Image (cartoon, rainbow, N blue to C red):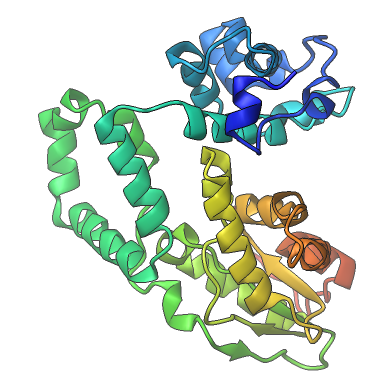
Length: 320
């Protein structure tokens, strides 16, 4: 039987995905929202049950369903605890795709989500512009003033503001298009995905990553035309936009001269490894997406496989 959710979204969670859940509850203690809120509806098991009810037409895609699915951090901690191998991340991302197709969010929320996902994250100049503004707030003392006066609490932004990273002086976008040669004997050649938020908030981490690769005999190329990996779009239910971003990165980074496509951002890496899932029905990109996904490596994963060069001298000091 075709349900409303099925007819609206081709990205709906399928029976093959959610039927693997045996409702054992071993995921509960691995779920941060369940541990904080203590509600079954905010556990992986509870959310999967709601997805099943929506897919069968017994539960509407309304405020209650949206609230519980939105609360999920999509951290996928439950997946490592699950004895049945439930692919929870794919379930919740598809559930959010259904929400985007079927549920009309409040006007301001729609505008903000659309601006952030479809404008800022897809335009390096806009992202850099916002990062500069936020960096000014952090350095000017206005951020401390906002905390002290309680304005952030009044606006409901106090907890979110605590999570905000510090923005770099020199963004990593300046390094796009550059090649960084290996030090000593060449042992590998990689394309490096720098990330979008990482390029404005963790630029020095990116530069350190490249230096470590160079010191281990790896030629590193940072493609100029690379874009956002699409992880945030896929997590939020904007799967069509995530596909567009995936296609761009495949065009730019899938090249036989690279041994691997490396990133230091776990969220980027996990999504790029699932490009084959995003593009499985794309006749032009399905095969290329599988080839791309097979080449994606976290930098630590790549270095372990390559073999880390031992240090030439003892280092005495506090590391962390």
